[in-house]
Length: 388
Image (tube, rainbow, N blue to C red; front, side, top):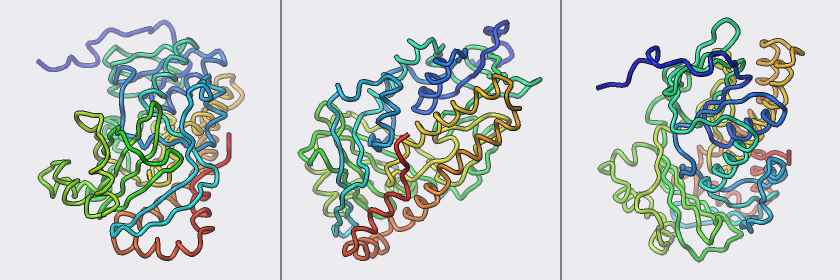
């Protein structure tokens, strides 16, 4: 038996048009829902999983987001989270460079962070539909119809906050999917026990990827790595085999992987990650967070960008809902503001990534940068913003 056709499902809330419908309950979607609901708008949010749950993420957030998260209602100061102010980077041959982070950041798991934001959203009267799949979003007669496993919902504005890749991207035939599949990446994450300094984030290069580790809450560390999909494919599609034959060629990474105590029975994984340029608008749907553009993880700024993009959208959407601007003006304003804030960071991130995951070039980069620490700080600043 297959799934029933979407058209066979009963319509839900057809008499009540929501102001905003949000697809995806990650950082961008949850924070946007909170901001808009607090302004008095009726918001529905669809998440295919059930909170709390783990997801692949480096779990390091730049301090530029600290004040914003507190305003959303998170008691960050009470959680005693590790503050991170140092970065250490090693090349595949073990050569390394260490430098202070200009703004610094803090560590927190997505398991804790997303679930806490979901609780705040529910208390702010956001209608969250968990364990709900979204099949399509259609623009009809000035509104959007969101077709889900729970029926169809009518909203004035639809926002795509679903993250790195979705079935909607495939259905809409978004251009970034047309890239060479060999350029796609696989992400792998563990929570581990370690004795590394809690104020430091470490990035270890290996052929075709890099691995980061930093401390999160409750004495745990997040160990997360990104690798070209061919690395996994060429090693029996086995994560343990790939780690032994590829990652552990870096002596510093071998030492790390041999010493940590892994707390997961199985790693959390995600495939088909793309860093190609994306559009911020599809079929009159505003794309927010990773759905609009994904910065390379080595920059350590993806979570802050998702949060900041929700703030930008939450400032522009009400202008349309209050009939102060047209839909076209809203869409143009959002795209312009998004690109002014993030396009340069993404471009710099893609440039830096060309040196990472390639043994020769990453060794050269570290040797060039080591005598000039101010250059390291300059590159970090190019991929980060100010407090918002």
